[in-house]
Image (cartoon, rainbow, N blue to C red; front, side):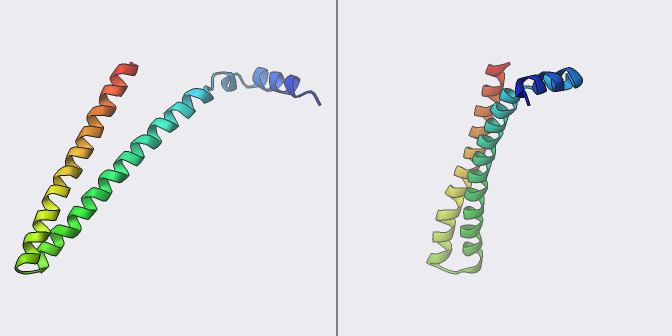
Length: 97
């Protein structure tokens, strides 16, 4: 069986196959994986801040202050992380276009 001939026959039979761009699909998959990883880190930061702020709600005294001191900066950093990634990805999309 001649593989090259078989591929040529398949491309002739199905012209839609010739229009597929696997390299472009792999590039977009890598880009989307990068976005997913960034959003996962942001979600982890927000969950960590939720833990500390929750601890501040159910404790008293110095533990409450510690929970607030840990939770608020982590929350703000998480928001800045997500906003920074969105701006970075918007600039990257604009540069590609």
